[in-house]
Length: 204
Image (cartoon, rainbow, N blue to C red; front, side, top):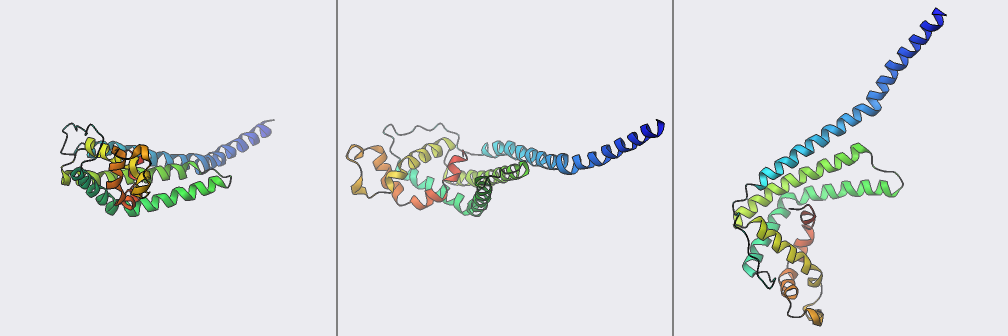
């Protein structure tokens, strides 16, 4: 009986040791690694708010009542977008490729693992941080506030679809409207806006 009990204890100990090792290698270690990446991303996210606070122009923006983007304001906005394109364009391409890889695996019936997802979001936070630094520098160089920038961006992307058509093809109900006038400005910068569209959904 004692031998049987002793044998059970030995087996139990081996299961505990081996099982504990397996638990560490196959469950806890990946989760710890993923959790560390998530905490790192959270730290970066907190840093973004500090970076954004460095925008010099904090004057409340009074948008034009008719919704038309002033040409001078548009030029400053374009300068900011160009700076973002130069500073984070390559990083954005890498991030997009990574997401396509994850989506491709999901489309084949396999869901991305926790480490993959957190790794992707870690890259996203890194991109946001880098782009936010570039954005703040560009905004300060142009003397532009975030409120003004975001208003112009909203009008520009609202007019982007109309800007893809010939001016003569503007639907009659929209002719002479603010969105039609904005489309005239946007038309020459469609490529730039398309290439920097990701910065819009990132919530800059």
